[in-house]
Each structure stands twice: as structure tokens, then as C-alpha cells.
Amino acid sequence: MLESKLRSHFTVKINDIDDINIDDYPDKGFVRRELYPWNQHEPDRFSPEALQFLNDEMKRIAPKLEVRVAELPLLRHGIRATGP
Image (cartoon, rainbow, N blue to C red; front, side, top):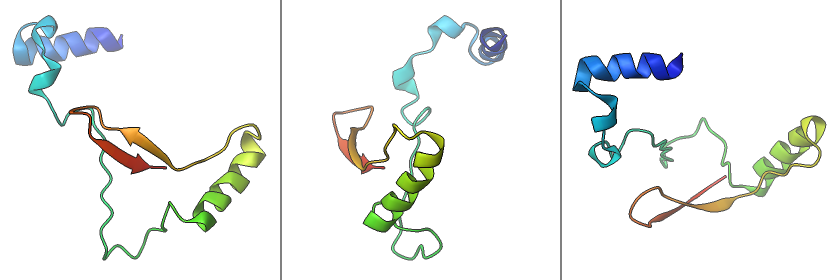
């Protein structure tokens, strides 16, 4: 059903879903999270305290899983970003 809806949407916009080139949409499909110095309402998600809190919560739900800070590759140009 999802594929049918997508084909219908893109047929109206582009004529054929198979003509879509992902390189034409560099920002679509990416999730960005900006941390600004003036942002005082969110915790530092990289702090040891925040990670401990997340892991304590995770133990109750999925005791074999662990939250860690990891360096993840960006999905273009080989640039790397750090994220939890």
C-alpha cells in the first residue's frame, strides 16, 4: 500500500517514480540535530550522567542493550559526525 501511495504521489509530481535520482535530493532523508550554545532546555546527551540515565532506563526494557556515544558516518562525501 505504501509503495502504491508513493508511486501515485511521484507520478503526479515527476511522471515516473523510477526517474527519481537520490542525488537530486541531498537533504531529503537526512535527519539533522543542531546543538546551539544558547539551548538551555535540553540536556547534554553526551554527558556521562545522561548516558547513565538512558542505560538505567534501557535496563528495564531491554537489559542486553546499551546506549553509547558513537561516531557515525554522514551519508554523503565521507564526512563523519558524532551522535548518541
